Structures are given as structure tokens and as C-alpha cells.
Length: 124
Image 1 (cartoon, one colour):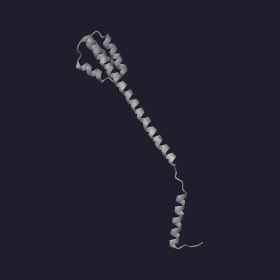
Image 2: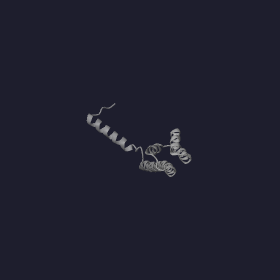
Image 3: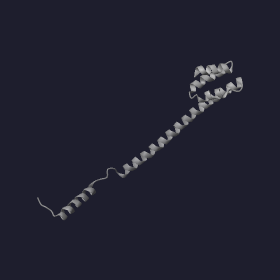
Image 4: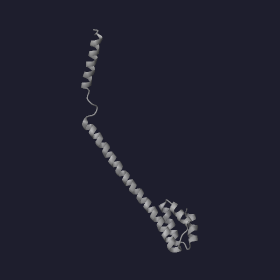
């Protein structure tokens, strides 16, 4: 085996390293990188659309709850006159649409505001 001087050894190692770097192909081609970027863009767009759709759903739910609450208050006001702030607060705190529908039925069928208040206490 031949021994090289430190200068020649360093030069040889440098040339070997350069040769290996030139021969090494990139792990991903430009097309693959563009494809990945496009995939990220599409994923972001899909995520935004899903977020918008979810926002619409939540808005509809909130609107339905508020309409149901308003309907109950309207029925009570038409039937019995002014309703107390206590009853309004109780109605405004309810977040279950099915429960609000039951309360609306009670508002329509109650014979008095006192009877409605009793049924409201039972329903909750």
C-alpha cells in the first residue's frame, strides 16, 4: 500500500468528495417539489372551505336557537302581556333546540303565566 503525503492525501479526499457530490442525485426532483407545494395549497383551500362550511352550520344553529327563543317570548307576550326579565333570562340561557320546542308548546298551551312558569321549572 502506498502512503501519500498529507497534501496529496487531502487533495485526493477532496476530489473523491467532489466526485461523490456530483454523482449524487437530489432526493426529489423539481416536479416532485412543485407537486408537494401544489398539494399543500390544495389542502389549505380544502381546510378553508371546511372552516367556512362549519361556520355556516354554527351560524344556522345559533339562528335557530335565537328564533325559537324569540318565538316563545312572542307567544307569551301575546297571550299574557309583558313577561318578567326572570323568564326571559331563563329562556335565553337554554341552548338545546329540542328543549326550546317543548317550552314553546308549553307557552302555547299554558292557561296562565304562572302555569307556564311551573311547567318551565319542570322541563328544565
